[in-house]
Amino acid sequence: MNGVLPIRSRIAAATVAAALVLLVPIAAYAVVGDLLDTVGVPSGLVNSNNCSVAAAFDGTYFYTMQGGLDVDCAGSTLQVFDPPAPDGVPGAPPDDATLVATKTIQDAGGNPVSISAVEWDASRSTPGNVMFWGAYADTVYLIDIGDPAAGGVAVATFQFNPGVGGATLVDGLAWDPADDTLYYSPDVDCNVYQFGLGTGGQALGGLLNTVTPKNLAGESDCSVSGVAIGAGNTLYIGRDGTAEIRRVDKTTGAFVSTFATTAGRVEDLVCDPVTYAPLEAILAKDAYGGPLGDPDNHAFYEAFEVEAGTCPLPQPEITLDPPDDMNEAGADHTVTATVKLGDRPVPDLLVSFAVTVGPNIGEVSDPGECFVNAGCTTDANGQVSWTYTGSGGPGIDTIVACFTDEAGEEHCAEVSKTWVDTTAPVAACTESVNPAGNVPQAPGKGQNEDGFYHLAATDSVDPNPQIFVTDTLGSGPFGPFFTSTTVKLTQDSEAVASSQPMGGPNSAVTAHIILPGEPQIYAVDASGNISDPITCFVPPPPK
Image (cartoon, rainbow, N blue to C red; front, side):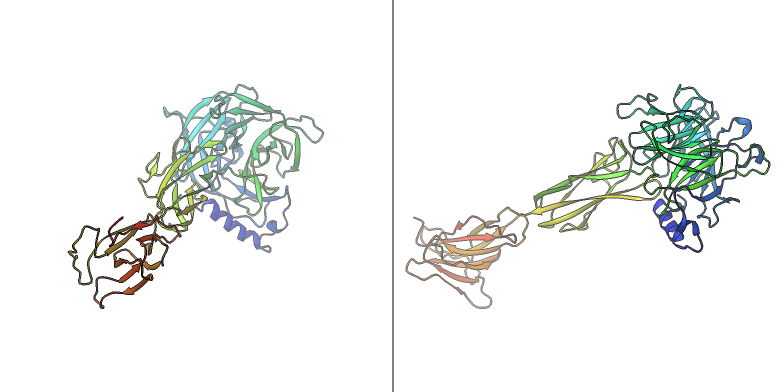
């Protein structure tokens, strides 16, 4: 995205910064509820007209709406900001974020659409194309932001009317990747409402639950504005006008924990485990940037530390199946990658496959090799499969499948594949030449009465199995010999089994082998598999 650091790079940079204790004391001494930063997000409006409640973060950019008092704190201009590095002095005056782009939100007919709350949907976003939920005045939209770093138009598509009453201004909106649902709260309401989004058997816009947040005494005390999805079946809620951020049970609204904020007008909330890493933060958008209507107002949000692991960003996950398997070397093996965000499949993501360790190291997926989508992108079920041939012989392969999300972070999964060789080679002996390289014209009716044989063995894995010579009495064995070796075999029931070189240095025959029983050969491959014996008939004639 135009050189902007991906999530992983931002985390690394922020972690280094946090280690500089003298320069950034907040990283060393912050505790839950402490103010980590105050970040200005200049609205571009007359300061006394500032009124914006929207807050969204996708791991790279912070988003808010350019709203004013004269338009009920809503608007049709989405502002995209690049957050600054953590501030060594977290309070006022705010350290301004950098405005990257603005987007005009319109419907398909080009008409402006007013929005007061926005929320990033990681599962519906793809690299370079960000999708948001937006809400205002009892209406919920799905908004195609496109490339957030490029200005232009964002198209809003109507989804449903919540129909739960309350204020026209919506200042709490949170998408839950665990079950693909949307939490919605009108301004200073007593409840947070959970709606289905048309997946997982849920109706689009169907009311699934009404969450009534409680205080420590178990009482509903209302004033709910901002909402963010926490870990472990919890919600963070901002209580407008009370200078409080509270954590409650996502299902029942039961009290979990709370801390005080420094600004009274706590509006929408969003998790940020990136900017202040290794610390986790929740970002709280202030409504006015100061006292209502004050000409000295400066639009801002605040970052507060929260418990580690309680305020994550939604992250897609990739799995690879089968987790382990065993096949004959030389066979084909298929693995299937599945990409989901919570329970929701993520389509149209490019997945790369590679064998990183093992006898087939270096095998990689190339365009056209995958299915159902030949180009190795996930289908509507979030799946794509790849097949390769285990031609490297026995051993254990490590297979890795990876994709890169829209923030530039790579996600991978790996499985193992065991290749075995249990198939015996096949041996053969065919009439061959004498030491001079000629085929003898021996009289008689027996097969190859001069006993010159070309030895051969084939195997599905081993290109050159060993060949041994014995007889029906178990003599020897003599060898090993290899394919293309020629020997002379003689059967003499009175003789002691023996093998001697035959001919001079240019002889076409390697050895003369005398056996008391019917001569036989067998082959052994590199895995120790032994072929069935093959009889190579020589005088006396076959019985």
